[in-house]
Length: 466
Ligand code: SAH
Image (cartoon, rainbow, N blue to C red; front, side, top):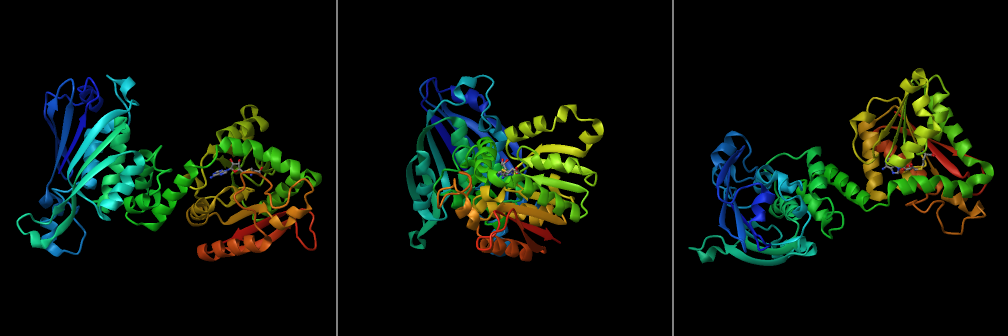
């Protein structure tokens, strides 16, 4: 398969410096599935074209079990389109031989790394599953001009009709690293296949190479789904992370949370009652190793430290600033070493699977879930209830029915401007019961704060046990 990139940026031979490949010297690289060759059909002051020719060895693929997994039987393993069509093999070759440029590094031309340059890109055969329309939907929102010619299945037998392959030319003005990241992600998406098994790592790659453009792409869902080979749990994670990129600054959320919510709830110092109820639930569970997830400024951590029962206490939050404030409040740096050894603060997000959260007795998630919008809430459920799986989980969230009782809260408004939802008791219980049933927990519910006979208490708490 052949890919060419041409630039008319001047001096055009800067392309050689950005790619770290000398235009005067053709080079070949061994890859696990074949070979990549780089050469420059033209390289002068006005125009420079680099060609990446990827040779795939179909017999080698069979030996290494990397061949097509289709249903074409034994023959398809040996005779297939992989040597000719642009596919995930091309992405691997780009990452391998143009890795420095893809990562946005350049020793010789650092000032050009972020500079938009005109590029003309050609693919000799690009499989477009979903047709030219899908090709356009992928590239046009990123600013590309597209010329695509559909290739016949076999030029000698026109009756056989058209193939799924296109000769494609793209024109765009972009920094090289952006162009390479678009190609890296979108070529396998168009092919709708990958030559290797995809795992969690692939979500990370998608996030890394999609940074700055994928979250806002109108086709982000289709891109994530195809890129992750239609594996539901992986693309749910990816979509949640993309939603996260569009989310407000976590530090802002953490900082204003305390002020705004407290201002509304202050009359009854609800916060103290809530934290008291959570500590009681954790103590009652006999836990010794506990997590405070979305610990904010560390109010619960402060109470947990006072209880000898808790030998290991972890506070995690997505906001660096909240963690800094927590450290100050707890006088972490001046803490006696016995205390200090019991406490760890860590930065992390509840929507990413995280090995560090495994093996705990209990987790508290206090006034956090209402900050997660629906795709992130689903990821959070998997992270906590399916992966981390502590024996006890305590979750609190506002009871929206109680909002009519707050004098300072206008009707129909949430208690904090970053809240994505506030649930009634029925809604919270339906969510908690569903999550409990699917993940093998039992849920109990307790009111927190003064209880009103019609609207209930201001905070609602669920205690999940295995
Ligand atoms: N539990 C604390 C803070 C509640 S405010 C208390 O009761 O005082 C909500 C907190 O959740 C904020 O600190 C915010 O930064 C954190 N948060 C929001 N989304 C998160 C995520 N995806 N992962 C971890 N923390 C998150």
